[in-house]
Length: 478
Ligand code: GLN
Image 1: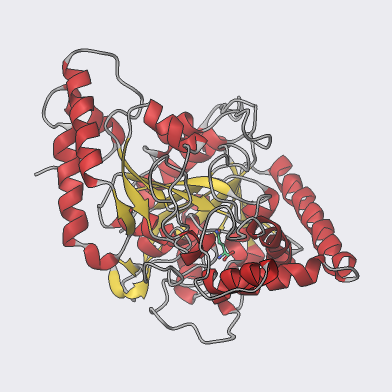
Image 2: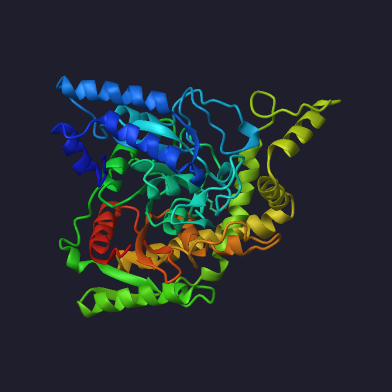
């Protein structure tokens, strides 16, 4: 039976003829059917994936040069434009809409011979952290079907964890790649802001949105990052510097680490999560690893400023869904243009999206703009300076990814803001733009996985992956 371990091993097996792309695709299509109850996919491109696999097998057998992601079976969150395929952000507002062009990340993986097997279910317009806000229904956690998969890249994390694809591309605005990866027990990587072009990815909050990678292991992150990253004339925020390895330190043993004390003493942090991370730090210290304690003074403001700035950006980004040129349009009789906008938008967006649009409008209005938004921007800049300061003394910062393991499905209470405040550890790297990774090292006594998060400086992504790989090799106990 087909079994995927990592990209290099699979590609070797392809080259020796032990396995074919068609076998791999058929395996995943069978698994998707078997585990349909997880609801990881919004759309599966089955026949198309098989024909693409046949073409790739033929290309390889003819001895033609193959791409870097030759035969890799990838799923994409339902926010990536893939020409001629549904693109709905799991929202009624876009139901029936098809992408007209390819997102840069999608084009780049296709150019390197990847096979896109389907688009993944997610929280509507990537707003959420449980996978319970989608027109396609809830995503279930493959580890325990009574739990949420996290979000908003819920289907992506569930698909990788349940072995329904090799890799998934997600988007991370405030933690949406790392948090579902944590809840489902897989690796979630959010590169530096701008490392991967956002062109063709439906916008949520543009100064935070980052394309991220969900995989079973660290080995597979770098080849995918290498393909999708790089400058792009279609996104002026795409970074132009190369993905390089810093010269220093020459030896991995000399990396300097800092653990964020305030994160570990957070009153809502699960005790087992805290103890596991403290024990890991103690063990590494005992082996001579340089581990210091540091703090982010602005910790208490993080989720507030994240939700203030992101909601203002949502208001502006959602304005394009006017139901005129594309998207949902009400079937109710309408009297004038304003009613057409109002009724269509009221029916097309769900409660959560509308809540954020309203909040954003409030924040952008005269008087409130200076009181909230300008203040939040100032605090964001202070945070960036503070974290950059930490990176003059340390290579990596560590903290948990989340406050708890996956919640029970349906457990959120109306009016409860704890799902927002639970984003506290992931929003740091989105507010500052630093790269961060969630490593599924631990298992809780309740049976659910949980992770360690590492944040690095913007030009230190390759070292971050190296350090992460070492930790995975040593401490992965799932
Ligand atoms: N949970 C956060 C939010 O709802 C993060 C979402 C994301 O990263 N897309 O905004």
